[in-house]
Image (cartoon, rainbow over all chains, first blue to last red; front, side, top):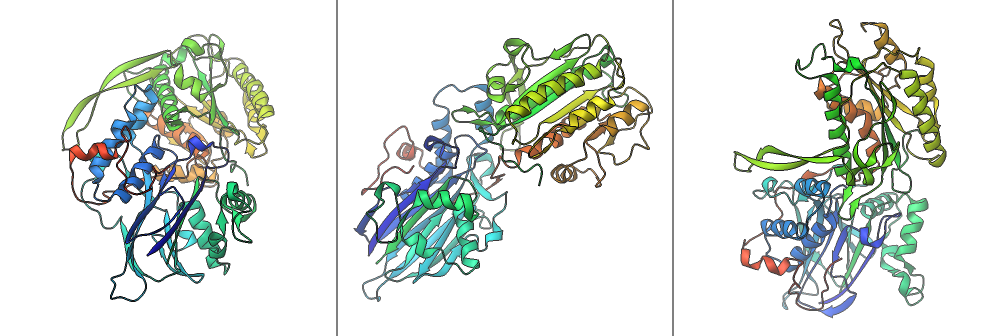
Length: 254
Length: 321
């Protein structure tokens, strides 16, 4: 199968790039023939410290496969305690960091099957997955309506003592079939909520998502394509997009 | 709609404590811990609150200046009451407060060990404010100082979430009736609403039953309580929500007024008075996930995903952001 992958991100307005606390993988734009592909988007909670680091570890671990949560938690703690920290960060680290994660795995079908293959998505929290075919939304998870985004999403914690056992209630796992020319989007909460609200209002956002490129590439994209940074700024100003770190990962499969 | 401004480093908010440090603050609360002077309880509460606010605003690169905070004491003198490096300063960015406590005490604390037992852990407790109790109760003078400080702050931050004043006193002003001055303080406003005044009345009066967020002055024991009730702001809907979460009954007429809570209630009251202004700052109040996945728990393999070392990625995948 051919995978075409591109990620877009921008920090919350008022913050600088180094304060961006979402994470995504793969980072680089590519188009490649693969039999299996894994990608992820994570969103570090804004009130924790070192939650961007936690989001990055979660995204890596998802794509790396087979990494236990306990091991990740140890990595995070080692990472954030490498240097002596002031008293307030010591206390904050003790309270842990939290992040939402949505990971997508796409597999090529068996040769005997017709064109296409399977996908599986795993999600905790309010970062979302969208499966779109011919500008029609087929599947959305783990939140399916724009009013389903609250202030207290269930997130993955670095706190090992709070993380025993597999809690199926908290983990959303959905799977399905893909066909050539399908598109998948992974988005952090602000953009996911906006996209669902547009979809509900009969204004599918998928053509906009399909045409996005980067500001630096502007003018080189397809006719009518727009830069992610410009679109996000405009939507924050007038379109009801919540001011937050904003990330979109687009995967097209053929 | 008032009280909706987003709190950010470009548009911070402000907390001002007005703390009675008169001689009568050496008294014990009529219904509280018989060994604890009110002044000590108040100092502990304010230090704990400053500690919490510092931690709340801490990010990996340091403490973000979402707030300016001041503590004005009134007793033998009236003025800023921080001790140590911040002595003499009025409103101070929270990052400077976090980085400059007068001292950091080490205390042992028992915490759950995750296996049903307790383990002793050393924690660092910063101190910015010491108990003081001497002199009279120049409440009018203090209200005038607060007015001056907040007028100047509002002129520089006209669109910010309005300042919140937490006034803690045992009640009897000795330099006149402060009613008009306290009302005038509440009449100050930013484009997002009026200054909120939260009156916490500590009383040694044996007839003073604890009252929280009353909606009428009728049951209050004395003129001091009644004056502090009358001059307190109405609870905002966000504050009412928090009060309800903590088990308090409130009505639309409820005021930001607490009489004689013990020190636990004092901390709760300060929390209810100050937390609504954090709501816009937090996009997530997390619950905790129990588990994500997956197999294997190979310690030796930790290094592969440890950011100190270059992870072993196959293909062209780069490190995520």
